[in-house]
Image 1: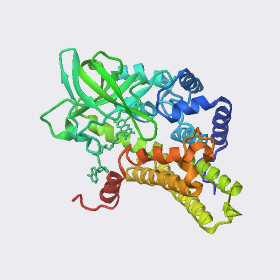
Image 2 (image 1 turned 60 degrees about the horizontal axis):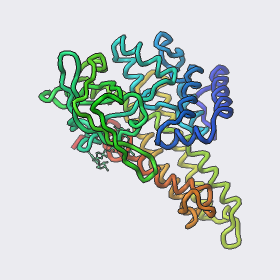
Image 3 (image 1 turned 90 degrees about the vertical axis):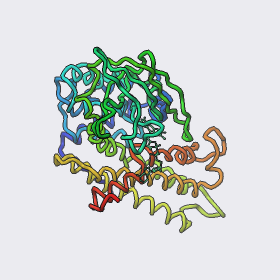
Image 4 (image 1 turned 180 degrees about the horizontal axis):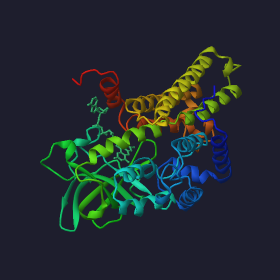
Length: 391
Ligand SMILES: Cc1cc2nc3c(=O)[nH]c(=O)nc-3n(C[C@H](O)[C@H](O)[C@H](O)COP(=O)(O)OP(=O)(O)OC[C@H]3O[C@@H](n4cnc5c(N)ncnc54)[C@H](O)[C@@H]3O)c2cc1C
């Protein structure tokens, strides 16, 4: 089945243009740099500039801020085509979180300073929310920004800040009022990631991805780098989170993986028979195909709300929840089908599918953690979606 939320000839032309561009420009090295956050090399940066020159990194933004005045539908098409080609859109933090927040709440000066550079693909942002005591409960954060005459002085520790080692700017949340109610005590800042007083140390994850601890020691941040109103940061974060969750829900990414597993079963014999003849294998593959269609429905429902001018709330959470858990089910199903050889490293000559499935098993662990854990999203669905009491 092929769902298409877009139908006008102009939209189809745009889809084709993006697809042709990716077919021509994508190299294995660019894919590698965007797939695992070890940092962007010159190839990844050059690719971002090309996308910027096409006007695709600020699609929904007004022209005066470097955007293309495109619609949310164009953004959706772009995300879908990138997913179909199995590559990530550069600078996801800026594109889906910082950029829209600056556009809606930032000062005129901040809009003019940052939006055109994001849209041109010149700068990268990293996300600075989580702290050792504050992950799911962001209100528990302890990093403090003290207002001085000409700047904020920021001190504290962030953890799991994935892009910090190569990003130019840190999209940072910190406490600006220690006495106010928690949800009115946080502000957002754009911090030059190389400012004096910042120390970044790596955390290597199971999936081979690098993320970081980021320490601030009396870091001076100019006052014009405060985003929007002081102490309104938590509301801005929540607003952007639903959009982020929706943009993380790219079911299209699962399709080529399932297709490669299916192709493997077509070509592999076990116990003298092709694997495709084994009813258990067929059953598992069909189950995955069905769940991918379910995931598309959930994803498209949330997008349809956006197209209609409504703001998806728990609907984008449900979509993120389903697809992140489906990633893991697909990885484990793939591993069962591949058998023991599936566990070998990608450089082993005996490993099937170039080690993709064992890599997916390890990498997909984080999908049910980042952007809100599955438990948190189930809680939100119960309260905001079903109207159940909080306790
Ligand atoms: C590889 C990786 C990359 C990341 N990248 C970034 C990044 O770039 N920037 C950033 O800011 N953050 C990032 N994060 C952080 C991520 O958003 C948090 O890990 C996540 O929000 C969970 O927070 P926590 O790790 O503190 O776990 P906790 O919040 O301590 O949760 C621990 C467990 O308790 C459960 N739990 C917590 N509260 C409840 C509740 N109320 N009800 C039911 N269950 C609950 C959780 O579901 C989880 O299973 C990253 C994390 C990882 C692992």
